[in-house]
Image (tube, rainbow over the protein chains, first blue to last red):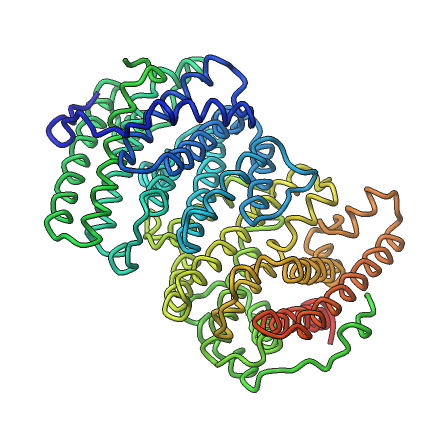
Length: 308
Length: 308
Protein backbone atom coordinates (compact mmCIF):
# COMPACT_ATOMS: atom_id res chain seq x y z
CA UNK A 1 0.00 0.00 0.00
CA UNK A 2 1.18 3.55 -0.66
CA UNK A 3 2.61 5.64 2.14
CA UNK A 4 0.34 8.68 2.27
CA UNK A 5 1.42 9.89 5.70
CA UNK A 6 3.45 12.76 4.21
CA UNK A 7 0.32 14.29 2.64
CA UNK A 8 -2.50 12.85 4.75
CA UNK A 9 -0.96 11.89 8.08
CA UNK A 10 -4.19 11.50 10.07
CA UNK A 11 -5.78 10.99 12.45
CA UNK A 12 -8.65 12.51 10.49
CA UNK A 13 -11.39 14.64 12.01
CA UNK A 14 -14.49 12.56 12.59
CA UNK A 15 -18.07 13.60 13.22
CA UNK A 16 -19.51 12.91 16.68
CA UNK A 17 -22.44 11.36 14.78
CA UNK A 18 -20.38 8.52 13.23
CA UNK A 19 -21.98 5.67 15.16
CA UNK A 20 -25.46 7.18 14.78
CA UNK A 21 -24.95 7.42 11.03
CA UNK A 22 -24.00 3.75 10.84
CA UNK A 23 -27.07 2.91 12.96
CA UNK A 24 -29.32 5.03 10.75
CA UNK A 25 -28.04 3.07 7.72
CA UNK A 26 -29.08 -0.19 9.38
CA UNK A 27 -32.59 1.21 9.92
CA UNK A 28 -32.73 2.55 6.36
CA UNK A 29 -31.79 -0.89 5.04
CA UNK A 30 -34.56 -2.44 7.11
CA UNK A 31 -36.99 -0.32 5.02
CA UNK A 32 -35.05 -0.80 1.78
CA UNK A 33 -33.33 -4.21 1.88
CA UNK A 34 -30.61 -3.57 -0.71
CA UNK A 35 -28.08 -6.05 0.63
CA UNK A 36 -28.98 -9.73 0.87
CA UNK A 37 -26.07 -11.05 2.96
CA UNK A 38 -26.17 -10.04 6.63
CA UNK A 39 -22.38 -10.11 6.87
CA UNK A 40 -22.04 -7.79 3.86
CA UNK A 41 -24.77 -5.53 5.21
CA UNK A 42 -23.12 -5.09 8.61
CA UNK A 43 -19.71 -4.35 7.05
CA UNK A 44 -21.19 -1.94 4.51
CA UNK A 45 -23.17 0.05 7.10
CA UNK A 46 -20.08 0.28 9.25
CA UNK A 47 -17.64 1.42 6.56
CA UNK A 48 -20.14 3.82 4.99
CA UNK A 49 -21.34 5.37 8.25
CA UNK A 50 -17.87 5.82 9.68
CA UNK A 51 -16.54 6.81 6.25
CA UNK A 52 -18.94 9.71 5.68
CA UNK A 53 -18.32 10.82 9.25
CA UNK A 54 -14.73 11.41 8.07
CA UNK A 55 -15.75 12.79 4.66
CA UNK A 56 -17.90 15.56 6.13
CA UNK A 57 -17.03 15.71 9.85
CA UNK A 58 -18.80 19.07 10.22
CA UNK A 59 -22.11 17.99 8.67
CA UNK A 60 -25.38 17.73 10.59
CA UNK A 61 -26.93 14.27 11.18
CA UNK A 62 -29.46 14.64 8.34
CA UNK A 63 -26.70 15.59 5.90
CA UNK A 64 -24.56 12.67 6.99
CA UNK A 65 -27.52 10.31 6.66
CA UNK A 66 -28.28 11.57 3.16
CA UNK A 67 -24.69 11.15 2.03
CA UNK A 68 -24.39 7.73 3.67
CA UNK A 69 -27.63 6.46 2.16
CA UNK A 70 -26.73 7.58 -1.36
CA UNK A 71 -23.20 6.14 -1.15
CA UNK A 72 -24.46 2.87 0.26
CA UNK A 73 -27.11 2.79 -2.46
CA UNK A 74 -24.48 3.14 -5.17
CA UNK A 75 -22.24 0.51 -3.59
CA UNK A 76 -25.09 -1.96 -3.12
CA UNK A 77 -26.35 -1.35 -6.67
CA UNK A 78 -22.86 -2.07 -7.98
CA UNK A 79 -22.59 -5.22 -5.84
CA UNK A 80 -26.03 -6.44 -6.96
CA UNK A 81 -26.01 -5.60 -10.67
CA UNK A 82 -22.52 -4.39 -11.65
CA UNK A 83 -19.05 -5.88 -11.79
CA UNK A 84 -19.03 -9.61 -12.73
CA UNK A 85 -22.85 -9.80 -12.75
CA UNK A 86 -23.01 -6.86 -15.13
CA UNK A 87 -20.23 -8.24 -17.30
CA UNK A 88 -22.02 -11.61 -17.60
CA UNK A 89 -25.19 -9.90 -18.89
CA UNK A 90 -24.66 -6.22 -19.71
CA UNK A 91 -28.21 -5.95 -21.10
CA UNK A 92 -29.70 -6.80 -17.71
CA UNK A 93 -27.60 -4.08 -16.05
CA UNK A 94 -28.61 -1.60 -18.77
CA UNK A 95 -32.30 -2.33 -18.03
CA UNK A 96 -31.82 -1.81 -14.28
CA UNK A 97 -30.05 1.50 -14.89
CA UNK A 98 -32.89 2.49 -17.26
CA UNK A 99 -35.30 2.23 -14.33
CA UNK A 100 -33.12 4.61 -12.33
CA UNK A 101 -33.16 7.14 -15.20
CA UNK A 102 -36.92 7.39 -14.73
CA UNK A 103 -36.54 7.75 -10.96
CA UNK A 104 -33.92 10.48 -11.46
CA UNK A 105 -36.51 12.31 -13.58
CA UNK A 106 -39.06 12.04 -10.79
CA UNK A 107 -41.11 9.43 -12.64
CA UNK A 108 -42.36 6.02 -11.61
CA UNK A 109 -40.43 3.35 -13.56
CA UNK A 110 -42.53 0.90 -15.60
CA UNK A 111 -43.93 -1.80 -13.33
CA UNK A 112 -43.10 0.35 -10.31
CA UNK A 113 -39.43 -0.65 -10.16
CA UNK A 114 -37.54 -2.68 -7.60
CA UNK A 115 -36.37 -1.84 -4.09
CA UNK A 116 -33.38 0.06 -5.51
CA UNK A 117 -35.79 2.40 -7.31
CA UNK A 118 -37.80 2.99 -4.13
CA UNK A 119 -34.65 3.65 -2.11
CA UNK A 120 -33.27 6.05 -4.72
CA UNK A 121 -36.58 7.94 -4.82
CA UNK A 122 -36.38 8.31 -1.03
CA UNK A 123 -32.84 9.71 -1.17
CA UNK A 124 -33.70 12.10 -4.01
CA UNK A 125 -36.76 13.42 -2.18
CA UNK A 126 -34.61 14.25 0.86
CA UNK A 127 -31.92 15.78 -1.38
CA UNK A 128 -34.61 17.92 -3.04
CA UNK A 129 -35.69 19.29 0.34
CA UNK A 130 -32.15 20.08 1.40
CA UNK A 131 -30.35 21.23 -1.74
CA UNK A 132 -30.76 24.31 -3.90
CA UNK A 133 -32.09 23.37 -7.36
CA UNK A 134 -28.59 23.65 -8.87
CA UNK A 135 -27.12 21.44 -6.17
CA UNK A 136 -29.82 18.86 -6.69
CA UNK A 137 -29.22 18.79 -10.44
CA UNK A 138 -25.46 18.53 -9.95
CA UNK A 139 -25.78 15.51 -7.64
CA UNK A 140 -28.35 13.90 -9.95
CA UNK A 141 -25.94 14.33 -12.88
CA UNK A 142 -23.15 12.72 -10.86
CA UNK A 143 -25.40 9.77 -9.99
CA UNK A 144 -26.24 9.37 -13.70
CA UNK A 145 -22.51 9.39 -14.48
CA UNK A 146 -21.73 6.86 -11.74
CA UNK A 147 -24.38 4.52 -13.07
CA UNK A 148 -23.12 5.05 -16.59
CA UNK A 149 -19.66 4.23 -15.28
CA UNK A 150 -20.96 0.86 -14.07
CA UNK A 151 -22.45 0.18 -17.51
CA UNK A 152 -19.16 1.19 -19.12
CA UNK A 153 -17.21 -1.05 -16.72
CA UNK A 154 -19.46 -4.05 -17.39
CA UNK A 155 -18.80 -3.73 -21.12
CA UNK A 156 -15.08 -3.27 -20.58
CA UNK A 157 -15.04 -6.41 -18.41
CA UNK A 158 -17.17 -8.36 -20.89
CA UNK A 159 -14.69 -7.44 -23.63
CA UNK A 160 -11.84 -8.94 -21.61
CA UNK A 161 -10.86 -5.97 -19.43
CA UNK A 162 -8.17 -4.68 -21.82
CA UNK A 163 -8.94 -0.99 -21.44
CA UNK A 164 -6.29 1.64 -22.16
CA UNK A 165 -5.09 3.47 -19.05
CA UNK A 166 -6.32 6.95 -20.12
CA UNK A 167 -9.89 5.62 -20.74
CA UNK A 168 -9.84 3.90 -17.37
CA UNK A 169 -8.49 6.94 -15.57
CA UNK A 170 -11.14 9.21 -17.12
CA UNK A 171 -14.06 7.04 -15.98
CA UNK A 172 -12.67 5.95 -12.61
CA UNK A 173 -13.91 9.05 -10.66
CA UNK A 174 -17.44 7.94 -11.56
CA UNK A 175 -17.09 4.22 -10.80
CA UNK A 176 -15.49 4.90 -7.39
CA UNK A 177 -18.31 7.44 -6.72
CA UNK A 178 -15.93 10.23 -5.70
CA UNK A 179 -17.51 12.57 -8.29
CA UNK A 180 -20.87 12.04 -6.57
CA UNK A 181 -19.36 12.62 -3.12
CA UNK A 182 -17.78 15.86 -4.39
CA UNK A 183 -21.14 17.01 -5.78
CA UNK A 184 -22.70 16.27 -2.37
CA UNK A 185 -20.30 18.56 -0.51
CA UNK A 186 -22.25 21.78 -1.08
CA UNK A 187 -25.74 20.54 -0.14
CA UNK A 188 -24.45 18.42 2.76
CA UNK A 189 -22.21 21.11 4.29
CA UNK A 190 -24.48 23.99 3.30
CA UNK A 191 -22.26 26.26 1.22
CA UNK A 192 -22.59 27.41 -2.39
CA UNK A 193 -19.54 27.71 -4.58
CA UNK A 194 -19.64 30.46 -7.23
CA UNK A 195 -19.48 28.93 -10.73
CA UNK A 196 -16.25 30.76 -11.52
CA UNK A 197 -14.57 29.17 -8.48
CA UNK A 198 -15.99 25.71 -9.23
CA UNK A 199 -14.64 25.87 -12.76
CA UNK A 200 -11.31 27.48 -11.84
CA UNK A 201 -8.10 25.60 -12.57
CA UNK A 202 -7.02 25.24 -8.90
CA UNK A 203 -10.37 23.69 -7.90
CA UNK A 204 -10.53 21.41 -10.95
CA UNK A 205 -6.93 20.26 -10.46
CA UNK A 206 -7.50 19.57 -6.77
CA UNK A 207 -10.65 17.61 -7.51
CA UNK A 208 -8.86 15.64 -10.23
CA UNK A 209 -5.96 14.74 -7.96
CA UNK A 210 -8.33 13.56 -5.21
CA UNK A 211 -10.45 11.66 -7.75
CA UNK A 212 -7.39 9.83 -9.08
CA UNK A 213 -6.18 9.11 -5.56
CA UNK A 214 -9.60 7.78 -4.50
CA UNK A 215 -9.88 5.43 -7.47
CA UNK A 216 -6.35 4.12 -7.40
CA UNK A 217 -6.06 3.46 -3.67
CA UNK A 218 -9.39 1.68 -3.91
CA UNK A 219 -7.93 -0.46 -6.72
CA UNK A 220 -5.02 -1.41 -4.48
CA UNK A 221 -7.11 -2.00 -1.38
CA UNK A 222 -9.85 -4.02 -3.10
CA UNK A 223 -7.45 -6.11 -5.19
CA UNK A 224 -7.48 -9.26 -3.05
CA UNK A 225 -11.23 -9.08 -2.39
CA UNK A 226 -12.07 -8.62 -6.06
CA UNK A 227 -9.68 -11.33 -7.17
CA UNK A 228 -11.39 -13.75 -4.79
CA UNK A 229 -14.85 -12.67 -5.99
CA UNK A 230 -13.80 -13.12 -9.63
CA UNK A 231 -12.63 -16.66 -8.95
CA UNK A 232 -8.98 -15.71 -9.22
CA UNK A 233 -9.23 -13.65 -12.41
CA UNK A 234 -7.19 -10.46 -12.51
CA UNK A 235 -9.34 -7.60 -11.13
CA UNK A 236 -10.24 -4.76 -13.52
CA UNK A 237 -8.17 -1.94 -12.07
CA UNK A 238 -5.11 0.20 -12.51
CA UNK A 239 -2.54 -2.43 -11.42
CA UNK A 240 -3.56 -4.91 -14.15
CA UNK A 241 -4.09 -2.22 -16.81
CA UNK A 242 -0.76 -0.56 -16.06
CA UNK A 243 0.98 -3.95 -16.05
CA UNK A 244 -0.48 -4.71 -19.49
CA UNK A 245 0.37 -1.28 -20.89
CA UNK A 246 3.94 -1.13 -19.56
CA UNK A 247 4.88 -4.80 -19.54
CA UNK A 248 5.20 -4.79 -15.75
CA UNK A 249 4.99 -7.78 -13.46
CA UNK A 250 2.42 -7.57 -10.68
CA UNK A 251 4.87 -6.35 -8.03
CA UNK A 252 6.21 -3.67 -10.34
CA UNK A 253 2.67 -2.60 -11.22
CA UNK A 254 1.71 -2.34 -7.55
CA UNK A 255 4.82 -0.27 -6.84
CA UNK A 256 4.04 1.99 -9.80
CA UNK A 257 0.43 2.53 -8.64
CA UNK A 258 1.66 3.26 -5.11
CA UNK A 259 4.02 5.90 -6.51
CA UNK A 260 1.18 7.40 -8.58
CA UNK A 261 -1.03 7.53 -5.49
CA UNK A 262 1.70 9.23 -3.48
CA UNK A 263 2.19 11.78 -6.28
CA UNK A 264 -1.55 12.56 -6.49
CA UNK A 265 -1.74 12.82 -2.70
CA UNK A 266 1.10 15.34 -2.82
CA UNK A 267 -0.67 17.33 -5.54
CA UNK A 268 -3.89 17.24 -3.53
CA UNK A 269 -2.15 18.49 -0.40
CA UNK A 270 -0.49 21.35 -2.33
CA UNK A 271 -3.83 22.24 -3.95
CA UNK A 272 -5.59 22.29 -0.57
CA UNK A 273 -2.86 24.51 0.90
CA UNK A 274 -3.03 26.91 -2.05
CA UNK A 275 -6.80 27.29 -1.92
CA UNK A 276 -6.80 27.57 1.87
CA UNK A 277 -4.20 30.35 1.73
CA UNK A 278 -6.26 32.25 -0.85
CA UNK A 279 -9.30 32.23 1.47
CA UNK A 280 -12.91 32.82 0.42
CA UNK A 281 -15.28 30.13 -0.89
CA UNK A 282 -12.37 28.24 -2.50
CA UNK A 283 -10.93 27.70 0.97
CA UNK A 284 -14.24 26.34 2.26
CA UNK A 285 -14.39 23.95 -0.67
CA UNK A 286 -10.74 22.92 -0.19
CA UNK A 287 -11.55 21.85 3.39
CA UNK A 288 -14.47 19.79 2.09
CA UNK A 289 -12.29 18.12 -0.55
CA UNK A 290 -9.65 17.46 2.10
CA UNK A 291 -12.29 15.48 4.04
CA UNK A 292 -13.21 13.56 0.90
CA UNK A 293 -9.56 12.60 0.34
CA UNK A 294 -9.16 11.70 4.02
CA UNK A 295 -12.15 9.37 3.97
CA UNK A 296 -10.82 7.45 0.95
CA UNK A 297 -7.39 7.24 2.62
CA UNK A 298 -9.08 6.05 5.81
CA UNK A 299 -11.41 3.49 4.26
CA UNK A 300 -8.71 1.32 2.70
CA UNK A 301 -7.78 0.18 6.20
CA UNK A 302 -11.34 -1.07 6.84
CA UNK A 303 -12.10 -4.76 7.17
CA UNK A 304 -14.24 -4.69 3.96
CA UNK A 305 -10.82 -4.72 2.33
CA UNK A 306 -9.15 -7.01 4.82
CA UNK A 307 -7.80 -4.15 6.96
CA UNK A 308 -8.37 -3.12 10.64
CA UNK B 1 -50.93 8.19 -40.42
CA UNK B 2 -53.03 9.59 -37.56
CA UNK B 3 -55.41 12.45 -38.19
CA UNK B 4 -54.22 15.15 -35.79
CA UNK B 5 -56.07 18.03 -37.41
CA UNK B 6 -58.66 18.14 -34.62
CA UNK B 7 -55.97 18.95 -32.03
CA UNK B 8 -53.15 20.42 -34.13
CA UNK B 9 -54.77 21.73 -37.30
CA UNK B 10 -51.88 23.91 -38.49
CA UNK B 11 -50.55 25.77 -40.30
CA UNK B 12 -48.07 26.20 -37.48
CA UNK B 13 -46.34 29.47 -36.62
CA UNK B 14 -42.84 29.52 -38.09
CA UNK B 15 -39.88 31.73 -37.30
CA UNK B 16 -38.80 34.22 -39.98
CA UNK B 17 -35.29 32.80 -39.40
CA UNK B 18 -36.15 29.28 -40.64
CA UNK B 19 -34.04 29.34 -43.80
CA UNK B 20 -31.17 31.11 -42.00
CA UNK B 21 -31.22 28.40 -39.32
CA UNK B 22 -30.95 25.67 -41.95
CA UNK B 23 -28.09 27.61 -43.60
CA UNK B 24 -26.33 28.04 -40.26
CA UNK B 25 -26.51 24.25 -39.75
CA UNK B 26 -24.76 23.72 -43.10
CA UNK B 27 -21.96 26.07 -42.00
CA UNK B 28 -21.74 24.41 -38.57
CA UNK B 29 -21.40 21.00 -40.24
CA UNK B 30 -18.60 22.38 -42.40
CA UNK B 31 -16.68 22.96 -39.14
CA UNK B 32 -17.91 19.74 -37.51
CA UNK B 33 -18.49 17.12 -40.25
CA UNK B 34 -20.90 14.85 -38.37
CA UNK B 35 -22.72 13.46 -41.42
CA UNK B 36 -20.78 11.62 -44.11
CA UNK B 37 -23.39 11.38 -46.85
CA UNK B 38 -24.11 14.68 -48.64
CA UNK B 39 -27.70 13.65 -49.35
CA UNK B 40 -28.33 12.83 -45.67
CA UNK B 41 -26.62 16.07 -44.62
CA UNK B 42 -28.77 18.26 -46.85
CA UNK B 43 -32.00 16.56 -45.72
CA UNK B 44 -30.98 16.70 -42.04
CA UNK B 45 -30.08 20.41 -42.14
CA UNK B 46 -33.36 21.15 -43.87
CA UNK B 47 -35.65 19.19 -41.52
CA UNK B 48 -33.80 20.34 -38.39
CA UNK B 49 -33.59 24.02 -39.36
CA UNK B 50 -37.21 24.26 -40.49
CA UNK B 51 -38.30 22.01 -37.60
CA UNK B 52 -36.85 24.15 -34.81
CA UNK B 53 -38.26 27.22 -36.56
CA UNK B 54 -41.66 25.65 -35.79
CA UNK B 55 -40.66 24.40 -32.34
CA UNK B 56 -39.69 27.83 -31.07
CA UNK B 57 -41.05 30.32 -33.63
CA UNK B 58 -40.46 33.25 -31.26
CA UNK B 59 -36.80 32.46 -30.52
CA UNK B 60 -33.92 34.69 -31.59
CA UNK B 61 -31.47 33.42 -34.25
CA UNK B 62 -28.81 32.38 -31.70
CA UNK B 63 -31.37 30.38 -29.72
CA UNK B 64 -32.64 28.67 -32.85
CA UNK B 65 -29.08 27.86 -33.91
CA UNK B 66 -28.28 26.39 -30.50
CA UNK B 67 -31.37 24.22 -30.50
CA UNK B 68 -30.83 23.15 -34.12
CA UNK B 69 -27.17 22.26 -33.57
CA UNK B 70 -27.90 20.17 -30.47
CA UNK B 71 -30.80 18.35 -32.12
CA UNK B 72 -28.81 17.68 -35.26
CA UNK B 73 -25.91 16.51 -33.11
CA UNK B 74 -28.14 13.96 -31.34
CA UNK B 75 -29.65 12.75 -34.62
CA UNK B 76 -26.27 12.43 -36.33
CA UNK B 77 -24.79 10.66 -33.28
CA UNK B 78 -27.68 8.20 -33.37
CA UNK B 79 -27.27 7.67 -37.13
CA UNK B 80 -23.48 7.16 -36.77
CA UNK B 81 -23.27 5.01 -33.63
CA UNK B 82 -26.78 4.01 -32.57
CA UNK B 83 -29.58 1.90 -34.00
CA UNK B 84 -28.33 -1.11 -36.04
CA UNK B 85 -24.66 -0.07 -35.64
CA UNK B 86 -25.09 0.12 -31.88
CA UNK B 87 -26.99 -3.16 -31.76
CA UNK B 88 -24.24 -4.93 -33.72
CA UNK B 89 -21.59 -3.82 -31.19
CA UNK B 90 -23.12 -2.25 -28.05
CA UNK B 91 -19.67 -2.00 -26.43
CA UNK B 92 -18.46 0.36 -29.16
CA UNK B 93 -21.50 2.61 -28.63
CA UNK B 94 -20.94 2.53 -24.87
CA UNK B 95 -17.34 3.73 -25.39
CA UNK B 96 -18.48 6.60 -27.66
CA UNK B 97 -21.06 7.70 -25.10
CA UNK B 98 -18.38 7.49 -22.38
CA UNK B 99 -16.42 10.16 -24.26
CA UNK B 100 -19.48 12.41 -24.22
CA UNK B 101 -19.82 11.96 -20.43
CA UNK B 102 -16.42 13.61 -20.06
CA UNK B 103 -17.40 16.42 -22.44
CA UNK B 104 -20.64 16.96 -20.49
CA UNK B 105 -18.47 17.38 -17.39
CA UNK B 106 -16.37 20.01 -19.15
CA UNK B 107 -13.38 17.66 -19.47
CA UNK B 108 -11.30 16.66 -22.45
CA UNK B 109 -12.04 13.00 -23.28
CA UNK B 110 -9.01 10.65 -23.37
CA UNK B 111 -7.19 11.01 -26.66
CA UNK B 112 -9.03 14.26 -27.31
CA UNK B 113 -12.20 12.62 -28.63
CA UNK B 114 -13.71 12.59 -32.10
CA UNK B 115 -15.55 15.28 -34.06
CA UNK B 116 -18.76 14.52 -32.12
CA UNK B 117 -16.96 15.44 -28.88
CA UNK B 118 -15.67 18.70 -30.37
CA UNK B 119 -19.12 19.60 -31.71
CA UNK B 120 -20.80 18.81 -28.39
CA UNK B 121 -18.26 20.95 -26.53
CA UNK B 122 -19.06 23.83 -28.87
CA UNK B 123 -22.82 23.52 -28.25
CA UNK B 124 -22.35 23.25 -24.48
CA UNK B 125 -20.12 26.33 -24.38
CA UNK B 126 -22.82 28.36 -26.16
CA UNK B 127 -25.51 26.90 -23.88
CA UNK B 128 -23.42 27.87 -20.86
CA UNK B 129 -23.26 31.47 -22.04
CA UNK B 130 -26.99 31.66 -22.67
CA UNK B 131 -28.61 29.57 -19.95
CA UNK B 132 -28.89 30.09 -16.22
CA UNK B 133 -26.88 27.42 -14.33
CA UNK B 134 -30.06 25.44 -13.58
CA UNK B 135 -31.13 25.55 -17.20
CA UNK B 136 -27.71 24.37 -18.33
CA UNK B 137 -27.77 21.47 -15.88
CA UNK B 138 -31.28 20.50 -16.92
CA UNK B 139 -30.37 20.36 -20.62
CA UNK B 140 -27.14 18.48 -19.85
CA UNK B 141 -29.15 15.91 -17.85
CA UNK B 142 -31.56 15.50 -20.75
CA UNK B 143 -28.65 14.96 -23.16
CA UNK B 144 -27.24 12.32 -20.80
CA UNK B 145 -30.65 10.62 -20.75
CA UNK B 146 -30.98 10.76 -24.55
CA UNK B 147 -27.58 9.15 -24.96
CA UNK B 148 -28.45 6.58 -22.34
CA UNK B 149 -31.64 5.94 -24.29
CA UNK B 150 -29.54 5.09 -27.36
CA UNK B 151 -27.47 2.66 -25.28
CA UNK B 152 -30.65 1.12 -23.92
CA UNK B 153 -32.14 0.84 -27.41
CA UNK B 154 -29.00 -0.82 -28.80
CA UNK B 155 -29.20 -3.50 -26.10
CA UNK B 156 -32.93 -3.97 -26.65
CA UNK B 157 -32.30 -4.39 -30.39
CA UNK B 158 -29.36 -6.74 -29.79
CA UNK B 159 -31.60 -8.89 -27.59
CA UNK B 160 -34.10 -9.26 -30.43
CA UNK B 161 -36.23 -6.15 -29.93
CA UNK B 162 -38.84 -7.86 -27.73
CA UNK B 163 -39.29 -5.05 -25.25
CA UNK B 164 -42.50 -4.72 -23.23
CA UNK B 165 -44.61 -1.71 -24.22
CA UNK B 166 -44.38 0.07 -20.82
CA UNK B 167 -40.53 -0.10 -20.88
CA UNK B 168 -40.50 1.22 -24.42
CA UNK B 169 -42.96 3.99 -23.65
CA UNK B 170 -40.94 5.12 -20.61
CA UNK B 171 -37.68 5.48 -22.55
CA UNK B 172 -39.11 6.78 -25.82
CA UNK B 173 -39.16 10.51 -24.79
CA UNK B 174 -35.38 10.24 -24.47
CA UNK B 175 -34.66 8.35 -27.70
CA UNK B 176 -36.84 10.73 -29.75
CA UNK B 177 -35.05 13.66 -28.02
CA UNK B 178 -38.29 15.41 -27.04
CA UNK B 179 -37.18 15.52 -23.39
CA UNK B 180 -34.08 17.44 -24.50
CA UNK B 181 -36.15 19.82 -26.65
CA UNK B 182 -38.46 20.44 -23.68
CA UNK B 183 -35.45 21.20 -21.44
CA UNK B 184 -34.22 23.67 -24.09
CA UNK B 185 -37.44 25.70 -24.05
CA UNK B 186 -36.50 27.90 -21.09
CA UNK B 187 -32.96 28.87 -22.16
CA UNK B 188 -33.92 29.21 -25.83
CA UNK B 189 -37.07 31.30 -25.25
CA UNK B 190 -35.68 33.11 -22.20
CA UNK B 191 -38.18 32.36 -19.45
CA UNK B 192 -37.73 30.59 -16.12
CA UNK B 193 -40.41 28.28 -14.81
CA UNK B 194 -40.79 28.13 -11.01
CA UNK B 195 -39.99 24.61 -9.74
CA UNK B 196 -43.50 24.21 -8.32
CA UNK B 197 -44.99 24.87 -11.76
CA UNK B 198 -42.51 22.61 -13.55
CA UNK B 199 -43.34 19.76 -11.19
CA UNK B 200 -47.11 20.41 -11.10
CA UNK B 201 -49.45 17.71 -12.39
CA UNK B 202 -50.85 19.79 -15.30
CA UNK B 203 -47.35 20.56 -16.64
CA UNK B 204 -46.11 16.99 -16.18
CA UNK B 205 -49.20 15.53 -17.82
CA UNK B 206 -48.96 17.91 -20.76
CA UNK B 207 -45.27 17.13 -21.23
CA UNK B 208 -45.99 13.39 -21.03
CA UNK B 209 -48.76 13.56 -23.61
CA UNK B 210 -46.54 15.52 -26.01
CA UNK B 211 -43.62 13.17 -25.37
CA UNK B 212 -45.75 10.12 -26.17
CA UNK B 213 -47.14 11.82 -29.25
CA UNK B 214 -43.67 12.79 -30.48
CA UNK B 215 -42.27 9.29 -30.10
CA UNK B 216 -45.21 7.43 -31.55
CA UNK B 217 -45.79 9.60 -34.61
CA UNK B 218 -42.07 9.33 -35.29
CA UNK B 219 -42.41 5.53 -35.08
CA UNK B 220 -45.17 5.64 -37.69
CA UNK B 221 -43.42 8.13 -39.96
CA UNK B 222 -40.00 6.48 -39.85
CA UNK B 223 -41.33 2.93 -40.24
CA UNK B 224 -40.62 2.52 -43.97
CA UNK B 225 -37.24 4.26 -43.78
CA UNK B 226 -36.09 2.16 -40.82
CA UNK B 227 -37.37 -1.07 -42.33
CA UNK B 228 -35.33 -0.33 -45.48
CA UNK B 229 -32.24 0.54 -43.40
CA UNK B 230 -32.60 -2.67 -41.39
CA UNK B 231 -32.70 -4.77 -44.55
CA UNK B 232 -36.40 -5.49 -44.17
CA UNK B 233 -36.36 -6.40 -40.48
CA UNK B 234 -39.25 -5.11 -38.39
CA UNK B 235 -38.29 -1.68 -36.99
CA UNK B 236 -37.98 -1.32 -33.20
CA UNK B 237 -41.00 0.83 -32.44
CA UNK B 238 -44.47 0.93 -31.01
CA UNK B 239 -46.24 -0.73 -34.01
CA UNK B 240 -44.15 -3.91 -33.77
CA UNK B 241 -44.12 -3.98 -29.96
CA UNK B 242 -47.86 -3.44 -29.72
CA UNK B 243 -48.46 -6.08 -32.40
CA UNK B 244 -46.38 -8.58 -30.41
CA UNK B 245 -48.05 -7.69 -27.10
CA UNK B 246 -51.64 -7.73 -28.39
CA UNK B 247 -51.41 -10.31 -31.17
CA UNK B 248 -52.24 -7.68 -33.78
CA UNK B 249 -51.43 -7.85 -37.47
CA UNK B 250 -49.44 -4.93 -38.86
CA UNK B 251 -52.49 -3.02 -40.14
CA UNK B 252 -54.25 -3.40 -36.81
CA UNK B 253 -51.13 -2.28 -34.96
CA UNK B 254 -50.80 0.81 -37.15
CA UNK B 255 -54.46 1.64 -36.57
CA UNK B 256 -54.01 1.20 -32.82
CA UNK B 257 -50.93 3.45 -32.74
CA UNK B 258 -52.80 6.07 -34.80
CA UNK B 259 -55.64 6.00 -32.26
CA UNK B 260 -53.14 6.32 -29.38
CA UNK B 261 -51.51 9.31 -31.12
CA UNK B 262 -54.88 10.97 -31.63
CA UNK B 263 -55.75 10.41 -27.97
CA UNK B 264 -52.44 11.90 -26.77
CA UNK B 265 -52.85 14.83 -29.16
CA UNK B 266 -56.29 15.45 -27.64
CA UNK B 267 -54.85 15.30 -24.12
CA UNK B 268 -52.07 17.67 -25.13
CA UNK B 269 -54.53 20.15 -26.62
CA UNK B 270 -56.68 20.06 -23.47
CA UNK B 271 -53.61 20.48 -21.27
CA UNK B 272 -52.42 23.48 -23.29
CA UNK B 273 -55.86 25.06 -23.08
CA UNK B 274 -56.03 24.52 -19.33
CA UNK B 275 -52.62 26.01 -18.62
CA UNK B 276 -53.23 28.90 -21.02
CA UNK B 277 -56.50 29.74 -19.28
CA UNK B 278 -54.79 29.72 -15.87
CA UNK B 279 -52.24 32.32 -17.08
CA UNK B 280 -48.87 33.04 -15.47
CA UNK B 281 -45.64 31.12 -16.17
CA UNK B 282 -47.59 27.91 -16.82
CA UNK B 283 -49.28 29.60 -19.77
CA UNK B 284 -45.90 30.69 -21.19
CA UNK B 285 -44.63 27.14 -20.86
CA UNK B 286 -47.80 25.71 -22.42
CA UNK B 287 -47.22 27.86 -25.53
CA UNK B 288 -43.64 26.52 -25.73
CA UNK B 289 -44.83 22.93 -25.41
CA UNK B 290 -47.48 23.60 -28.06
CA UNK B 291 -44.67 24.56 -30.44
CA UNK B 292 -42.77 21.39 -29.55
CA UNK B 293 -45.84 19.27 -30.34
CA UNK B 294 -46.44 21.22 -33.55
CA UNK B 295 -42.89 20.63 -34.78
CA UNK B 296 -43.16 16.87 -34.28
CA UNK B 297 -46.53 16.86 -36.04
CA UNK B 298 -45.03 18.94 -38.86
CA UNK B 299 -41.82 16.95 -39.31
CA UNK B 300 -43.49 13.64 -40.15
CA UNK B 301 -44.49 15.13 -43.51
CA UNK B 302 -40.83 15.88 -44.35
CA UNK B 303 -39.01 14.04 -47.13
CA UNK B 304 -36.60 12.47 -44.60
CA UNK B 305 -39.58 10.21 -43.96
CA UNK B 306 -40.78 10.03 -47.53
CA UNK B 307 -43.25 12.92 -47.13
CA UNK B 308 -43.59 16.31 -48.96
